[in-house]
Image 1 (cartoon, rainbow, N blue to C red):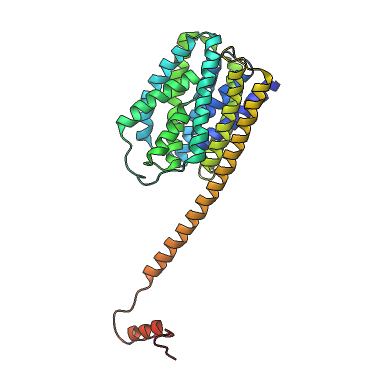
Image 2 (image 1 turned 90 degrees about the vertical axis):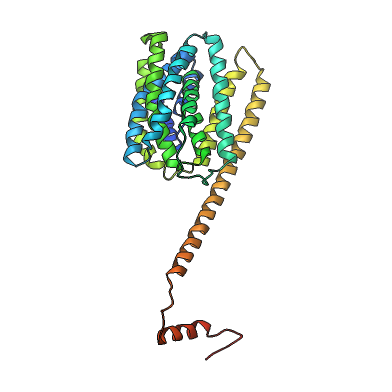
Length: 333
């Protein structure tokens, strides 16, 4: 029972992050399952079966709040489904001894990318509103779907930053579209695992635990996407993923690091993580201040444009006299 409650809480937290940031449900959930000793293929399969329900609910919630571009969903989701099916079969063919460190290495890479991407870079808005090309979305979906199935997560960490970096979509539209298209990836990956592993590869009880928490969080996350600063959340999630999966790598047969080495690495990661979160918070405050200043300047310009001089007559002369009154070069009483 305790395990189910823990899984539900993980599913809730992971979906809150995923729905408000457009990534990290699979990565966060798979990281936990690996940490408690689950077979990598079974962990990814379990998470993807839970994602069928959570991504469907999340997509409906994002659609309700107007966060979805359906053209992007189709153009990136279909190639993503193909990549996910292939990735599920590749992961299922690897032995546990090889798959665990391989998956952890993928997750560490994704975590580092999240940490660096959201800590150091903002969102480019110069091309906002321009259409996203199909020749960009197709390969992006294929790669992101493959990484998602083999790494137990990656659809959001690959797809969301790539679309944000293009600067052609509003952040909320990027997050809503990626979350909605994830339903196709979850279905395709689940079919791939069923073909490769059979039903015994999925822990249905654990999947239901993750699903229960995710269903509760999905509507709230779709609402939060308008209010949660992405830079802060990206830094927090990225650091957590790096720390957890570095632990798995250091304890694997690949490295088998001693306790002093492992603790020293953990300390460095925690220090960098804390610095990244602080930096993200400061940059968020600066961005808010700039946005406020720009809004005030725009309002002042709008107010100035609304002030029109009368066309002619005595009123115009009186207004000109009032405007020039009090100049040091030509004082008037």
